[in-house]
Length: 348
Image 1: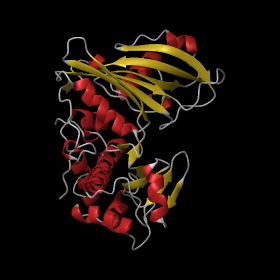
Image 2 (image 1 turned 120 degrees about the horizontal axis):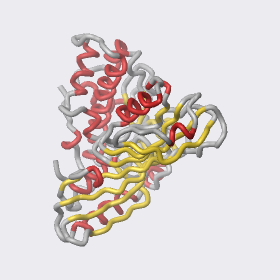
Image 3 (image 1 turned 90 degrees about the horizontal axis):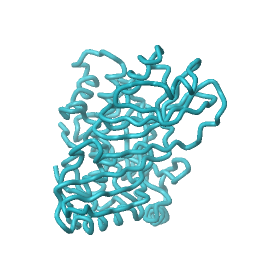
Image 4 (image 1 turned 60 degrees about the horizontal axis):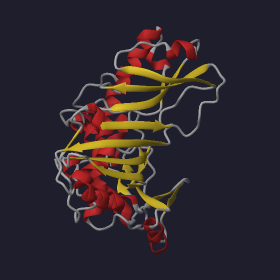
């Protein structure tokens, strides 16, 4: 049986010493600002609101807003989920007949509405261009800023940072993937569909992490293999049939290999290819097959996920007391800052 916690995965920057220390000592040490791929239009029946929250999950923020406005949670649009132990800004959409004035007057504990602008449609999941992070690490050595800078500059170069799923994907007890496996096996009773989907997604994420870890361990992180499903940055997916041509494109960040989020509808590597063999090995090591996911088709159709993510707008500042460092960077939507910070800190 496969058990690969996020903290046990290989580092891409293993030759560079980490800074150690502690992250999220207080919520203000972890700041996130979400950017949408488009601005609110200023006209329409829906209202886009930019909120700042502290010590709240996004679902808890949504519940608080819905309760205050007397509307249903499901009618509030959310682009992306944000951490609880943090100070974060993000965009939500509120349904008609809510007005911008009502939104700005909301009184919800640990939450402030910063902007309210009309728009012509509901905000959809995944509509996030990027997230910008400002993170403080405490209890670090005096040369932490130089160490952090060296690591982040390496990760900011193509092909980018490993797109691991962070430990929060696997639940507080780290058992979400195991619960997802029980759903596949039929040994766990189906319950709330949203929760079941989360458990199966955690299993998919664990398998993706195992696939990516193997690519790094085997020295294939920046290599295109025959059969790889490649993603052209800003474009679509295509099959790798000429590794000699595509490998330099991986090295420049023009394309990236994609890894499996296993499911019945997932795009598969070419039959008999090295890429297919590696994905089959991940499943076999976990005691699973692609057919294992057929029983949960309604919960997990399957998709592909980029192996590498672009790290932009890197900044590093040493604290005045010599024991803290602030790092900043921007990541595309869906990427985990904690996966970047595990490279920087190299602690459990």
